[in-house]
View 1 (tube, rainbow over the protein chains, first blue to last red):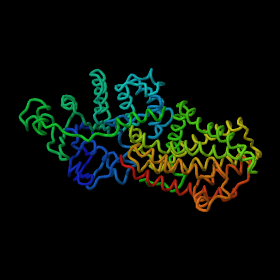
View 2: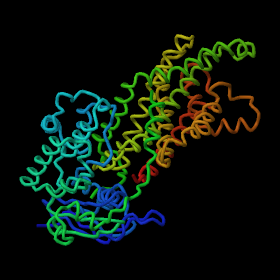
View 3: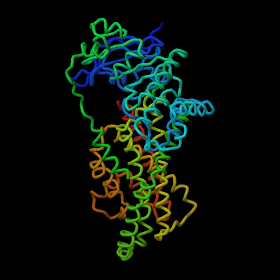
View 4: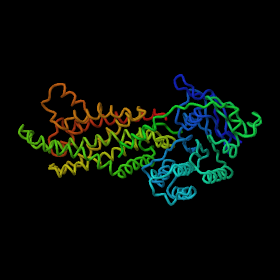
Length: 264
Length: 261
C-alpha cells in the first residue's frame, strides 16, 4: 500500500521552545493510525502543520501526494478534520453548519442536500437540524462535527481527540461507521486520543510522541511486546513515564465570559 | 495548482465568498439584541445633540443642526458596526470557527473578501435603519435623485472600516486590546471626522487631523448626497475613500493571510 501521509524531519519551534523536534513517520492509505502522547507532546502541533494551519520551521510533509505548504488547495481538499476544540458556528443551526461546510468544499446542490440528510440521520441529529448549535450539549456538538468532517468524502480524516464527551453508545456507533468506510472506501484515519483502550481497539498502527519526539512506533501488539506489558495503557506509561505534564493554559475561559458580556 | 491569491475576480470561488457573506448576514439578523442595542447610541446622539445643540447652531447662522448631524450619526453607526464585524475574527479565532474556514479548500483572500463584504452589508443595513430613524427626528432628504449615490458612500465607509477591523483583528491574539482599539482608534476616528461639527474654520492642527481622517470624507460624501453642501466636494470624497478602501483591503488580506492558528 502507498503512503498517504509522509513526514520527514519535521520541526516546529516557537522561539526557544521546540514543540516538534525532528519527527519522521509515514501513514499508509487505508490505515487507522493512532498518534498518541501525553498533553503538550506535540500531537496537535503536528496535525496543524499537516492540515496547512501552521508553517513548519523545517522538514518535509506530503499529504495525499501534495505539499501542505505549497499545494494548499489540493492538500485541503484531501482531508476532513474534527478539531480538539469546537469549531462550529454557534449562531447557526446544525443544518446550516453542514450546508456551509458543503458549500466551502464545493459539494453541489442535490448531492449536498442528500449527504446532509444522510449524515445528520447517522449521528441522530436530523430532528434537531433546525436548532441553533448554541443550544446543543457537548456530545451533540461533537457528533455534528464528526458528521461535518465526512461531508465532502475526504480521503483522510483527522480526528483530534474526537470521542471526548461521547457516551459509549455513540462512540461505538461512530467507530463502526468509520471502520466501514475504512474497509469499503479505503478511508485513512489519523487519530489522537488519550483513551488507550480505544486506540488499542481501532488502530492498525500507533506512533507515540513525547517532548516533540517520536519514541515508539508499531502495532499495539508490537508496543506491548517491546515494553513487556499486557495493555496499551501500561505500554504507554512505560514509554512516557508517569510524570504529569504541564500544558499552557489558554485565555479561552476568560474570553468566554467576556464574549457573553459583549454580545448580549 | 492554484494561486494563493487569485489576481482576478473571475477565477475566485464565488460560492465560498457567498457562503461567508451569508453567514455574516445570518448572524446579524439573528442577534436582535445586538441590532437594537447598537441603535441606542445613534438615537441618543440624534436626540440629545440634535435637539440640544440645535438652537445654538441656528443662532450661529449654520442652519438646521439635525440636517447637519444626521449624516454624521449614520456614518457613526456604519463605522461601529463595520469595525465590530471586522474584529469578530478574533472571536472566530478563539472559538474555533476560523479554523473550519482556514482548512477548507478556499484561499485566504476569498475568505477575507467574503467576510468583509458580509460585514459591510450588515453595516449598511445599520446605516439605513439610522437614516430612517433620523427621518422621524426631523431629517429631510432634499434630493432623492442622489440617494443611490448616498448608498455608494455608505458602502465605501462600510467596506473601509470592515477591512480596517479585519486588519487589526488579524494581528491581535485576543480581546484584551479591545478597549485600546475603541479609545485610540474608533472614537478618535468618529469624533475628529467632522460628524458633529462643521469642518470649516477650525484651529489649524484640527483642520489637518480632520483632513487625514478617512471617515471625514465619508461623512462629507453622505452630507453632499443627502441634502447639504459637501465641504471637500463629492469627487474628492469618492476618490479618497476609494483609494483608502483599496489600500486597507490590501493590507487586511495580507495580514489575514499571515494568520496561523
